[in-house]
Length: 363
Ligand code: 5AD
Ligand code: SF4
Ligand code: FES
Image 1 (cartoon, helix red, strand yellow):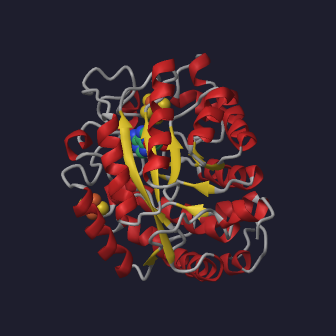
Image 2 (cartoon, helix red, strand yellow; image 1 turned 90 degrees about the horizontal axis):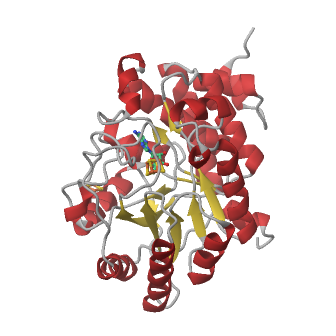
């Protein structure tokens, strides 16, 4: 006999069975989860939504993840790297508009010149913004030395999604080689923490072969790792990827969306003071996807600052939003959307994970 959902929601901690029941909630029942998550969000992190201006620095990638539209093997992708001047322009825009923080994201590369270019850009941004702009990196697996160099150059948060916490499934979505090693990814997450970053991770939701039990394990993974930030969203197929062959086995996009929303809400209930992103992939399915995520627990949003001419090329999945808009349009659009979702924007604040501060004993 499974426990009633109301009973589970009144508990302080959840086992795997509880999480599976929550994630399986139907249309009616899920409203109870959403209401509880909204209440917890209000109490522990408040109404504020923090911005992370996103700069998609380059779509060159040395890896070949089977799901990703910018994988090395996709010869249809037109490759680019934003110039240092353009990065500075985007960072200045973020600073002048009081975004508080930016994220620099790119495909995974670790050649010396790339590592150096990133360090240079980090130092320049720090100087330009007088250290006021928070900087998050999302540049994949790197050596401890590189992670340290970037940390010392001014980055203080790092996002590295585990993608899927079950090693067996990880093996299904990635080539079986040293470059795509599950254990190495775990070690990278540990290294990031050791170096001193606030560490974010995340998963994709609604992947082929993935079960609700697997997603419950993903939530348990976040908790056991005592993660500071999470960004997760629906898996969306991309035509020029090997995983496209399973497109007929997927649940409907709208089901993937609601499952993602339940993941966000349940995670907020489990980890009350972490930062959770309302991800772009959620909006790729539902035009109000990010607002809905904010209502049920997310408190971070990433307005796109990538120069418009490159946006079409950073296509991780189909129907990615904001490819025709520019920074100003996304800013205005998001402002309206966040207010509509009952949120307030944390202008000019870093909006660090309260969880991180607490662990460091600063609160
Ligand atoms: N659908 C959804 N998310 C994807 N990502 C990559 N490909 C896809 C896809 N097809 C996500 C991965 C990666 C992040 C940058 O984009 O989780 O970590
Ligand atoms: Fe490269 Fe990241 Fe895409 Fe994998 S998911 S192919 S590492 S950009
Ligand atoms: Fe980019 Fe709405 S956020 S157009």
